[in-house]
Length: 402
Image (cartoon, rainbow, N blue to C red; front, side, top):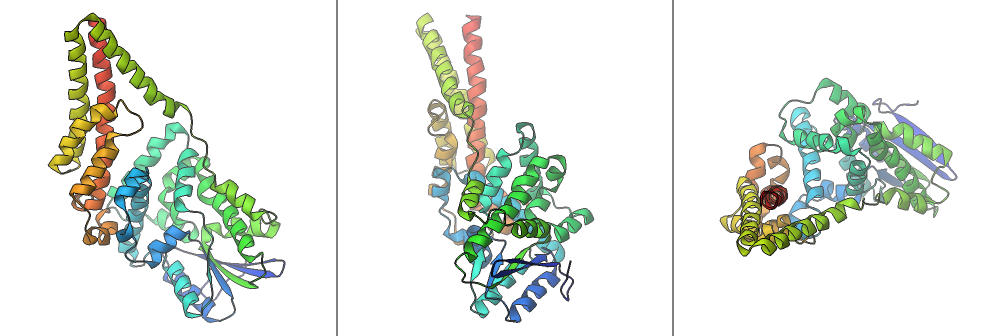
């Protein structure tokens, strides 16, 4: 394999009239950023492709991108979980920045900046990170999903230095793969959406971008872990015959199982049946069942928001909303509590500005209004879910005991 002067791995692949120079970079190496600069300053390329999707590109090049986030809309559209996962990944990258003094993605930033300086286009060829995370989650066996989520949480709260093994993985691999390193070793199902699928996706995107014949020489800046896979797909031309079909296939989310959509309605039916049986026996028993449902469900949801440090009115709202939203699967207590918290404590510009650094510590999640709103969202929903099951068991304990 030929290498550049800085020993960054390079592969040159020709497809038709286009020459792709694949530059494998290390995410914590100044040498990688310097090599990107050296390659582009040579003036021999008419386009540069980077391992970024539009959202990651915006985060890299727009300092106030978080400040442009409509938190209420994210909660309403059910994207709070994706934001939390992105923040968890960002917290890991912040730890790397503090340990090495080199911000991960410096080589991508260098590629974008030098392309701008030389007036050549930047091609964003990676798959959207949200789709990658969702396909990773759905591709994980259900028995391992809690382990996966626990690993993300641990990456946020850990203050330990990155191990030598992880450093080597970073030098040879991919930032997402390294974040999930412990789990990719345990489950080959994660390797697909994190690495192989993205190799295929980037090959198809490169073929799509160059199909019109606008570019002859393209520098492709990717993590070293993608070098072999991407080179193989480009060499074979896999996905290049119909790149749009390949891209569409790799962007498709797996169909959701039916039971998670049906189960809430089953629970509602069971609870309402319990109420009906209780009132048929006596108004007093029926009233007791309804009261305990309200008290248990509302209290646990309110406790969740209290733990999250919510505004007192948000806590009261959670108490009132949870018993009724639990009987309406179309809306959750988490959505109501999160929306009220955003309304009462609108995040400040400073909160968005310090969001990335704040989420690297446990205390920071409660200090920052943005991340605290996410905590309110999740803990209100968790409390309401626990309350639904506990209150449901209490209802049938009364009925069976009667």
